[in-house]
Amino acid sequence: MSMKPLKIGKHEIEIPIVQGGMGVGISWDRLAGTVSNEGGLGIISAVGTGYYKNKDFSHRNIAGRPYEVDNFYSREALFEIFANARKICGDKPLGCNVLYAINDYGRVVKDACEAGANIIITGAGIPSNMPEFTRDFPDVALVPIVSSVRALKIIIKKWQRYGKIPDAVILEGPLSGGHQGFTYEQCFQDEYQLENLVAPVVEEANKFNIPVISAGGIWDKNDIDKMFSLGSSGVQMGTRFIATHECDADDKFKQLLINIKKEDIVLMKSPVGYPARGIKTNLHFKIENGTAPKVACISNCVSPCHRGEEAKAVGFCIADRLSDAYNGDIENGLFFSGSNGYRAKEIISVKELFYKLQNGE
Image 1 (tube, rainbow, N blue to C red):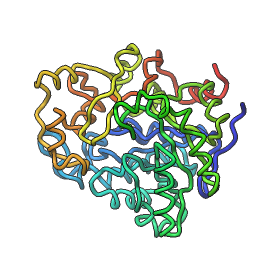
Image 2: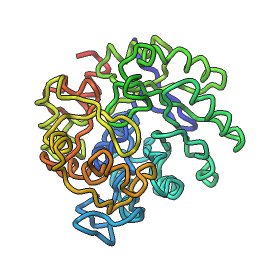
Image 3: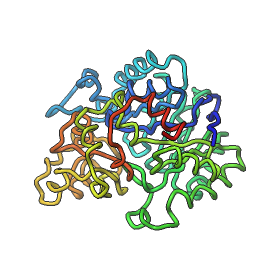
Image 4: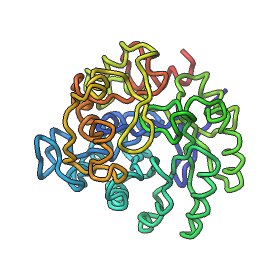
């Protein structure tokens, strides 16, 4: 099945493959810029930008970590990341992923628009007021992530109060890496699997001419073709881009990924309040026996954590552990992966990956 360009608002994506936004620091300038340059849509993660370039843009650090929201979500760093990505992809469409659950969501959305994002993607909650923060940026396309047709209906209804509807919607099934929009039990039930969610979401989206981008567990051309056959206009892929030379993650993360087995990928509790899928490492054993690094809540990253209370309940700080993964700390890092991450067996270039995804090789 041939791939047709994907239109998101005023922006056309030549190859309808969206690279998932992965934070802290897994998809920043190198990966996102290269993906966009190859004709897909590169997505810069706004999470943890204070760690960019060895925390050069974080003006106050405690215990080596960006202190408070304004440093963890550094505006200056986000501008620098976009500037460096633009050196790679020029004026091709470039997006930013801003989680709805973060503290200072509205400010970070505005920062991303001012930094030069053409498209803003938001998940980890229902972004009911997302258009409120982009009124001064009419050319910036807005793309919520949903896990059900009910969520899409709610968003459309609430956004119409702003005279806006989504420019596209990402439907994410329960096989994705990172946080899920489902309960632990739902992640394993047939009715909540991506292939069974696409049709009703596409039917609702078609009423408003909203393209649907399917995500979660998509790995190769066969998966992409299946999503197109079900009515999707594009796909989003995250984990597979980790195993590329251009990915901003530490090489130790990449090597960890290409050496894992299927059973090493597990669902776990998270301070964000959603189940999260990642690689089982020594961190998991430390959490279980109470020897994980102490929760200090230095960065105050997400509102559902209630200033570290939820982190203490599950046994780890997500900001600290994701930043450790970005820095290649195998002992203490939290390494997110989709359910198919074990299928990565080598590190290749983004260009080669796009060739494989389009030609099935």
